[in-house]
Length: 304
Image (cartoon, rainbow, N blue to C red; front, side):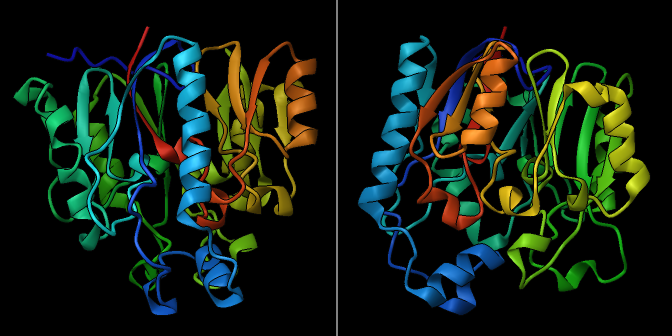
């Protein structure tokens, strides 16, 4: 059986589910797009090719291999996009949560069922139907669980709003000893530079006490400011709207010292090295066209 353990975003990684780009299907129609960035690339004829995305994910897998991380992959479903495993489930402490995702993505969860079956049944949680929640919005960080959300009355009108206020209450009930800290995110169905699809699109903790942050991803300035105060202004790498669009905050930590990043993120990667991080640079720019990057492609199961 798998003994799950995830208490934060950066402790040394032991086991992870990495999505797959194999058999990800034809280019979606415009009306099938889940987010404005994918839509823009569909319309422009620049939507990523399967072989390019398989190449990028293989590069990611090689980094995990280098650091001795046990890697699980979903069973390959024909013509289904299974890249973003963070969307379908997430782990906090020793519990695995089934994400209440867009209904037509449920088959993606079934493709990792062979892994879920290795988890004690009482540790697998299926939230009730009214709880909308995706792993990109959920970040365990020691005593906190940071949650990206959108709670305005027009929530149903945004396909980009994935985690609701019911999800916050649900997590509070599941983890009475932790502080669940919600953050209202800026949503747009049409403008990718004004849309924080998930919390990890505009914020991510790295190392022991540092963070990548984009102010305009947050709807409430006080909530953004809380993060600045919590990590300390000198420990924050603030990204621009264009860098948020490119997914600069969606890197992935293998340990407090090792960060996997996209090879073109020169400004970020230089800053990380100056802060003492080991930066493993890989190509991931094609996958980024679907408004997801490295954190989105992973479902960590066990950290030290």
